[in-house]
Image 1 (cartoon, rainbow over the protein chains, first blue to last red):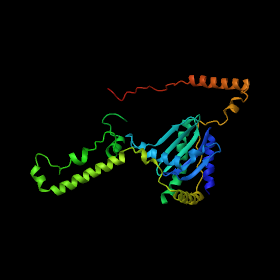
Image 2: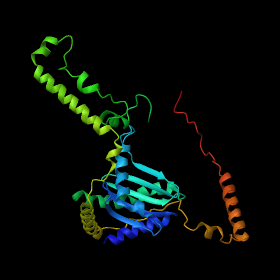
Image 3: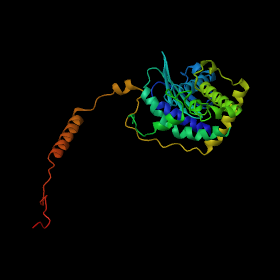
Image 4: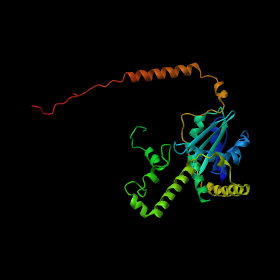
Length: 124
Length: 165
């Protein structure tokens, strides 16, 4: 069942040091699949945070450089990376010291999973 | 490529999507053939109603495009009610569970660069013995020497004459 998918997410997370959570949500921030460790900040897992990011991505697409593909925000303690995979959003929450390049590189590894999940979301 | 006059994929986005150089009043009004000009002022007066409707639709389109392009931070609030959120989450769960039944675990691709979760463990590991190091070095030196000694021996003439009188 979905546990297998979560297991895969956890396995990907284990490859990179400092990653706290991987969330695949729709544009409104409703989680489709998520995997998080205990160290993940609760705020970043809330729908309000994830919705705002989805909207911010749309707004950032209006800046004149075409649609935004990825957003990386680095805060004091955490960094949050988003991939825009319409109609889904992939959000990764990691420690600010985690390797950002490695996190961005996960997009390719997650692409097949996201593709499978897209089919589930498109029906609704 | 980003060169001037290049014909690559950027073209599509520049033609279709609005961008920083898109003029708001460029296409719909000024280029419209029904716009009253000096030359066809008389003919324009004959169809004032149609013309007004065209202008109105053009203006509406401009207004709509502008509204779409405006970066509106106040629209950042979620419109999703709590029960809607829960309903949708439940639906997703069901759908994902159905999808997961035929889900195949993706094959892990080999990667040259892997992040090491516990760096201190690797750094504190005992170094390789000197004997192995010597063996490695000598093997490498032999390989380098062998590579340097590769020579091409020509057997035949490189330039051949084709029956030139």
